[in-house]
Length: 391
View 1 (cartoon, rainbow, N blue to C red):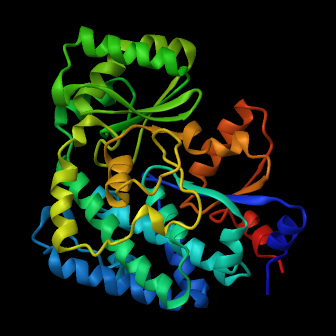
View 2 (view 1 turned 180 degrees about the vertical axis):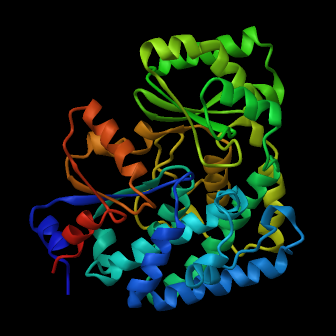
């Protein structure tokens, strides 16, 4: 049976825009709920657990990047066995777990009246915030049934090793005591290599980052880089925690005066920055030996939009390289990624697959700045789920 929301969209000549979230969102509670409450996802979870088990057997637990393993099934079924949040947020762990969560939300949508071919024929485009573009690419390939599960397993291996190689570039899970103390002294918590700065325009923040790099003599891996342009007044800087602390101290009086926010992300590597240069070369060895990723841009059945410059990822691209570099190295410009929402009047609703509601709020912020009222529905929000799943 076709869901009422899809039927109404088709009758009104309107299409969907699909988007997926990125790093820094909690996932274990959401994925546990899906596992326990949605029997239609049984095969999906069996493939997930089997793929993770195979990966874990190849990357031994003695490896510090996955020192407590990848036994998601045990974490879900025996919550007391779940590792600490500090472990759960490691890029070498969280990237694949977030991917599983958001693809589970997609698989649930398909099972609730959104046949794959119907859904994609009624979709104007897809993208994802940071790592979410990999899930968007998976959906754009347009597989269903057992073919979907096989493709999903391939993509899960792809994104695990993506997160692993990214974390390998910055294998520091503890912050120096002096940096912790410095943050405590100025009232900040949980220093990390990425921080959200809210309350400056793009030009204002770029000017201050450039000034700090110059005044503080930051070069090479000490440099500050604006890595994600989320909304007109919300951006993220990626850098070593020591450099971020120095930046914070330099501009804290001004930030306090204008009530700007400085909030560290729950992540463990400086994604979307030159710090990650060199990771692609290492990932290529995984593609040659550990990852079966034969998919190309020609396999995409619906437009997949770049999070760097908003272009449609075309058939001339190396899809594996395009996805890897957009998630790990290149800066993200969310206004460009969702640019179709500003130009395509056929788009009647945005469906967000989480995890959490962070990315749906970022899109809402971009839309409100352009006085656009397109509806944003997020699968991580039960109220939105009721709208989407109504028969």
